[in-house]
Length: 219
Image 1 (cartoon, rainbow, N blue to C red):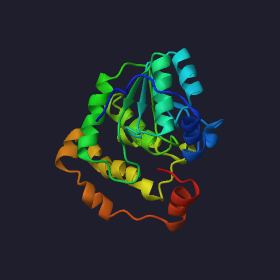
Image 2: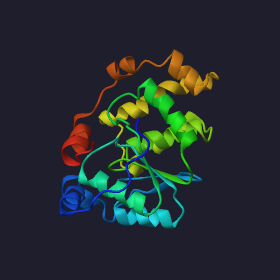
Image 3: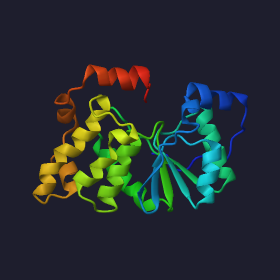
């Protein structure tokens, strides 16, 4: 888990081309998918340098990149903008098409205790990984019921539960009956939850997979 991005990077034509074209940044020029999860924590899609400047202007102190460490132009521009505007950029790897692994879940808990608030979490589209982490934030930090927290994974954010990304929904659904019996989330994670079994029992819909993987080209 890499938390602190290196300060600054040279912004050039290649970086902007990769952000706008290769990373589909042109789709995010006006669609930011930005929402407040709870006081002091926001979620969004991949922010441009201009949006990072605006985030700093409204008091955001930390940006959490849920796409993990990268070397592409979009990441370099993000790192440079955070350095320029005094924000801490933290890289945290989350998968959108896999059952969350136990190590990542514990690392997410640690992450939430270490960051400086207010903060904003983002992935590429702000639909799946941002939804998972938003739900975990509500569950772990805000102590919200799992059924309420899981609403961070919803169609209104662009999340499609019938695709492979539905494994994230299945993860929370598997915990619901144990929460009803009074078992804490991390007791369930450590002693009951089996990622492989969850994956084996999950079924996708063909149309949903084509939508997310072929049409929307989600990560």
